Image 1 (cartoon, one colour):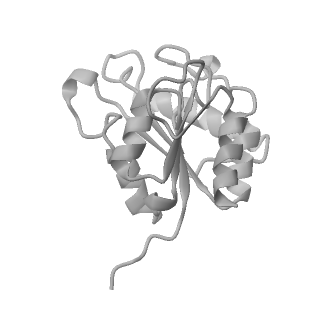
Image 2 (tube, one colour; image 1 turned 30 degrees about the horizontal axis):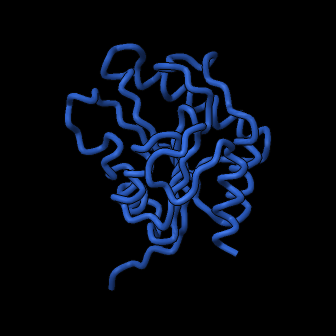
Length: 177
């Protein structure tokens, strides 16, 4: 008998969504949570969502930083979130260069599909929040319920658009009530 996916999730982009967008953020000192993110993630945790970070990190392939340094950056992110009673359940990243044509680089859905398999996530009940059209496209390719695009311009075909992470979280939670 096949195991049925039971968890719902919110997949969240890192740079420009969770944290200040520092091009090729290569050290923990440059990592800074954006306003409202910790509180928003805490609300998602409290409402039973798995929170999963999915991020392209081609700085590794470009030689700007190592996977060990990326782990230190993510450790800082988890510690900063924990100060506010929030956490992410998993972090998936693509270390490849865009020219590598790998299967895990967004907008390809491999990271989301892998997380769904490993964390028993029902993608039809899950969301994506990101600041780029590639996040929206990844959500749609993976079969997620809906996607939210953060940013000033409302281009693209996201289900919802806002400038604020907290608004994105409220929109997701409103869909669930």
